[in-house]
Length: 222
Image 1 (cartoon, rainbow, N blue to C red):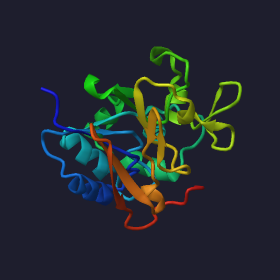
Image 2 (image 1 turned 60 degrees about the vertical axis):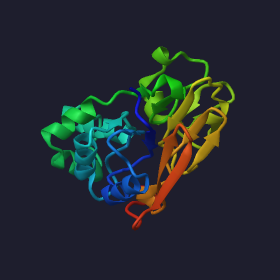
Image 3 (image 1 turned 90 degrees about the horizontal axis):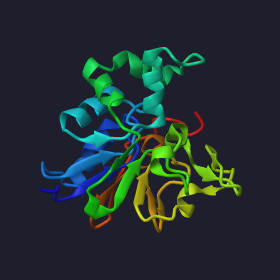
Image 4 (image 1 turned 180 degrees about the horizontal axis):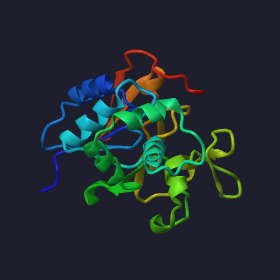
């Protein structure tokens, strides 16, 4: 039987208290499927507690770029010293936390009846899902006029504005642009860790629920 509701939650970045408040505001029950758009960790006050809560509640997540960064710290594959914010996360994660992050896919299709797919950053229009670049799926923000992708917001238009469907893409990553609502894509990174809001999208009704950040934990330029 399909879950009663599917709740997709934007970038948490270790803001566990706000996450707990959002789950309460959504009145999450054991029948609901809860999926996170990635970036569970880094920049916020309690990355380990956030991952622990998500895995212990049986929730799901796709891989975000900051999650991938701490995984690379553990694997020793970074080509430069890590930022201390990420190194601190890596020191605190438990074996169960690492296993959870390592198992996060790059994207997750939701119940077929919803016609939706969750990814951290996005997709390049016109490229089949199985041929999308990993780097793009966790870092894309914009599309240039020639159709190539960019990490920058000032290097083209929002990729989601050009996404043709038919599957509706739910994503995060782009806190600068904030909430994005396009015909075939919804962006949920509303910058909680930067003192703004943590946002959930409840399906199938496509209702948005938001909670305010308790304070500013990180500078957007950091």
